[in-house]
Image 1 (cartoon, rainbow, N blue to C red):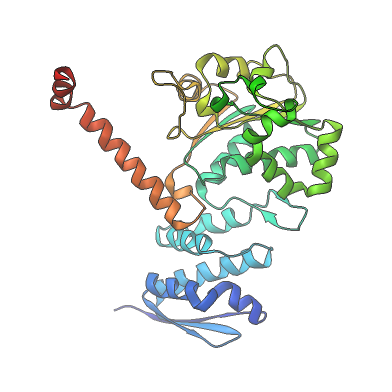
Image 2: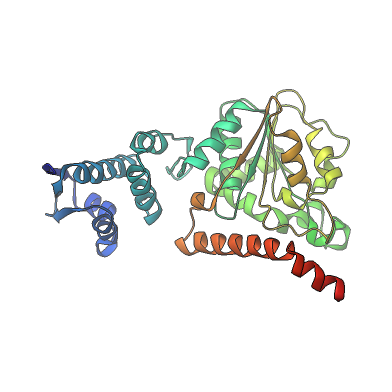
Length: 337
């Protein structure tokens, strides 16, 4: 016989209740669909009753969301759904650890913290290693979290500057064909990094750091021949590097520096037949001391729910495409053509 239990969660005010239950109670409805217990909202509190285990799990999710909200985080459907998934998967102990790890506070007072266990592993790898590879689909926060860690290192005086680079595949690295000076030429390719820096630092500090050279931006080709010391270096969109470019970049590492290399192996734009430097490096260097390789999954996508489903659908389609192309019938058809 299942043991019944009653619990209640108290809210500080109506604003907190609205934040935790969602617009038109959308978060509350998800909780009702996920746990076999009753939820009764009474303005300044919510009462839970029913099977003891289900009530305990539901209360755990609500308490952790409440903690997260009081730390200054905007509660979205992602936090609610991910929290439910962890608790129902028997990983309730990871929930507080995940939500409680604030990396830094932005210029607007927003607390930046990992939102998935995959992101937590990624951040831990950056802290432990001189070089970290962050590989995963769009929306997993690879680039944004790398910039956050770079700013945190700069604030803590662990490095003296931040260097951002990215392969300009669309222009074939022939940036001279684009109008303007060097900054104008690379700006279109580095816009996601600029956006992240401005969000974290604020416009005024961002401009000051750019003017003083504390933040440096350069195309990947300009890294050749340099030794990067006392710097936090980020190579974004690394799936579009060649083998030679990747080796050249990694060997620029100097004393007191840290590198983060990010990319999505599902979005390689290199010419047909070219080997991705990121794919190759992740295989060669995985397990080498001082180098971390973190692979994030669709579960770590923190954009709209539809983005997660898009990533999963394309992944399944690519797998099926590879399977059918490797079949004897497919090879025979190609030979006939």
